[in-house]
Image 1 (cartoon, rainbow, N blue to C red):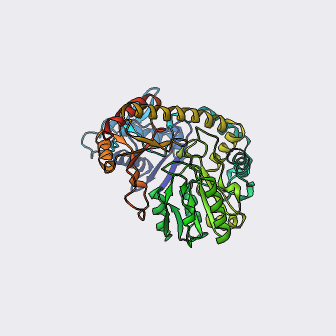
Image 2: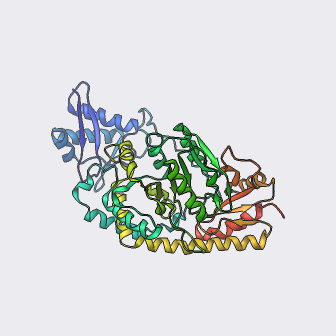
Image 3: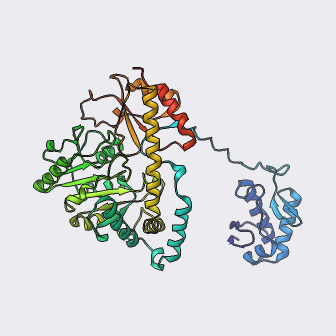
Length: 470
């Protein structure tokens, strides 16, 4: 006799699956099944068992059958019974004379993180607007139509696309409409959707950028060609036979600085002449401190630019929400790659972000964080001016990081010293394209957004202690 059952009694708040098998009646089979569940660890010490009546109803047996089975296991030491507490699995490892219960080994402790996290690219996690986000979540769930809880639209929720169309036009100078916005889970996801099914290489990229993105493109068999940089940004006049170029025009990553207006116009002219396309990574366009925000290149020619953004810097990378503003000719091909259903960005997160934007909470949060990050940047600059005046600080007009220019030949030793002191940061060389002249200046890329406020002073003190002397 074999019988599988699942107990769903609300009073114990847990489901339990057993198999009744072997010779003898149901009482004997139930005793064997419960004993094996305890012995194997499926019923952990202290677990509360279903009441007699509930279990009997689930099994279709007499209440006394369950009561007798419990009583025998209590007598054997497998279970304990106490008035008002119900029947529970005994706390000791195993009854005397019984096979030992296999207790899972304790999971190894996670490796301790750095004492001071000054890596680029991550906002201050402690500043996530939990109360405002929760309020938007509640409103979004309450107001969502029933169909929102079905399979997701690969283009993304229309509520979010409408909110983004208004916000991006107002804050970033983007010219679009909801039908040309496709929701994704971030910039890397956008690249996976575009290459190689929609766009093909070779792809021109800035001489400095994230190696992760280059690796992702290489996996898709896309060859990347580095464009040299100077104080005006990427030298777009050196574009060759490529049909696509990837730029960070608002704030070159990681060296800093916007793409000069004449080069913005020049790259648009190149795209028109070559029937090419510009991929605009607007990774931290909201955070500009010393001048008016630099508008998106997409506004110059919406049919030649794919504008890509996300909330990973403005809110949190944990949300996994981003967007592509596409030329009309790419909308259907990108949706075809995504498939018939949304498999990446959760619908409830999309609805929450839509409410967060429409309610004004997103603008308030960005303004608050812009002030906070500017103050942190100023503290970094002041600390270096006092303790390491020979170190030039660049790329500080915007973003969440700065570049510290080092004396020639000192980058590797400075990075090693930082590791030794428990400081997480990156050397500038980590971001150079492999095809770039390796005689480029040495430097450190220092993120000033990540540390929580009370730890920032100690992080700056530790940083100054590992910099090479003048």
